[in-house]
Length: 155
Image (cartoon, rainbow, N blue to C red):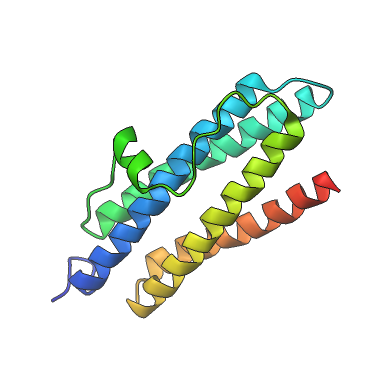
């Protein structure tokens, strides 16, 4: 049995479930980035304040893209923070004012995101879901480069 876009309904459901977990992670990641942006202090303030804003602007776009992909697959995107907190592997980061500490948390969070993106990529390829494959490929490419840059920043 196939859905409207021609993907096996069971595989689309599995993809939607995994995309919902990624959505939850991006929502927590977004909120953490907002907190870092607001609360950062120290010599790197101007540099990191802008970088964190760039990151959260990017994350909010991904939140919308992921939710819309879930809907395209005929799933229902999670939309409450209680749901996000229940399924997210990214945890809340509270009262972080040190830039280096924030960068380390961001790296940790990106590593969580990229592992999930790779898993979804495999599931999407198996389901012959080119739309999700393309989305995850783009995210992975971007995340790999960002991880390289953040790691270089800490050296």
